[in-house]
Image 1 (tube, one colour):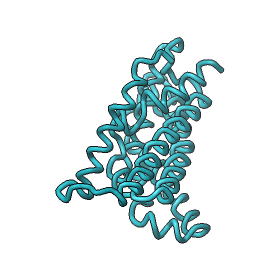
Image 2 (tube, one colour):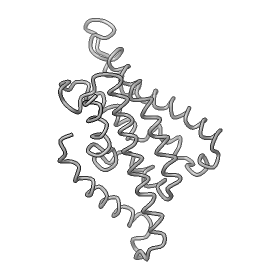
Image 3 (spheres, one colour):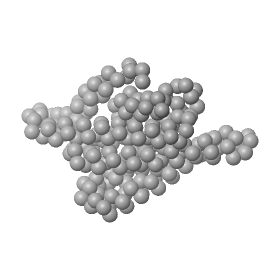
Image 4 (cartoon, helix red, strand yellow):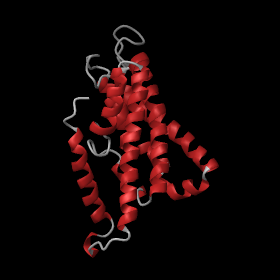
Length: 208
């Protein structure tokens, strides 16, 4: 249980997908204009991560890994295409669900909802999981079971959601600020994200 807690908080604060690895920046910058759309996209990304990372873990450990299907057979080179297929299928399910139950959120997210399929944070989480399978089980970053994969996925999703909601709240406030004309729009947003990333670096020294 201690390992799961460590993995969970580390994936939120230390190994944050946005502030540590800058993954998923396109939709992060485009959709974070309001808190409402930020929360919606954050929840969608978290759900996709929660489903795809454990499924990809099972694929890697039961099908693709060395000697999984037969002695001497290693199908790891197929991991990219299979991980992408899993992500695309889950995103399609999320898109249909949001369109049916929340048309306003579906319209607000626009093209960026189906583009979760190519959100590098989703693929990055699966590839990081693939690397962490090989770590020593005593390592706090190791993923040794489906449960660990689920914990890592939820932590990564919450970390991404925390980042986009925080930026959405700041950008809503900045609408009432006197921002210099050359910096209006993405200019001040990039500066804000940089300052937020620098602030999150304070967690990098924690031994979780």
